[in-house]
Image 1 (spheres, one colour):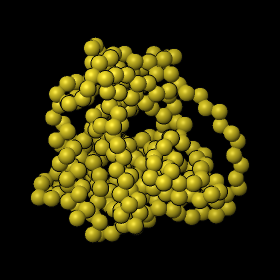
Image 2 (cartoon, helix red, strand yellow):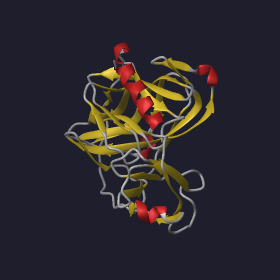
Image 3 (cartoon, one colour):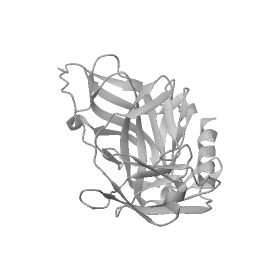
Image 4 (tube, helix red, strand yellow):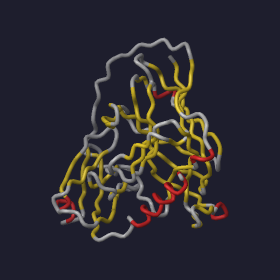
Length: 284
């Protein structure tokens, strides 16, 4: 059942490539005037959007949207900006983002016990979830809802279970957000954390210890797809009777809450039955 669900997602994403109009531009740092890589740009509450490339350029298509619809431009560590589609469509834009400076209160903890929290296994019948890099717009996210408890804990590492990926290396931005019941709220990270996966399959441990991430309560931990290099076509795989050559798949675990969204400003899909197999090692 879940394999059919994921395959349906892949089919929907491929259909989203059919576009009517184009929004394009470049995003730079307001102080240095240097191009900003991996900035998210998207029409709010839709799957239309993308992220900037190495030179700060973005481009994506959209259709059936009112000219007053809002486009949000955002990246961790910078102040968000919003524009109407009309404002961005009239000319190719050069947009300047200003850095956000955070005042962080000192938090003291004395971690003594290590434990894991999340989906540290998988279930065959739950299949997998992931990205089709050929059809999907960059900036889509997959993750898991976790409860850290009432006391502050330090996140030591993130563990991800790959079913299989068709690339030598894939790149992601880590997000950690506050969650209130089923409402996904503000970003808790204050800097971009870019991570990579190089294994073809199996568990990967991503060291987060030096970022000094200290949180409590209910959070959402997601990976935002940014880029993939080194396609291995010999890893082509049949998914729901269709051969897919450009995929990244994570194994799934039941009885965990999964978080999914198919665009940088798309609505969240919360699945209370299963999630990708991801867990945190924390110190408390």
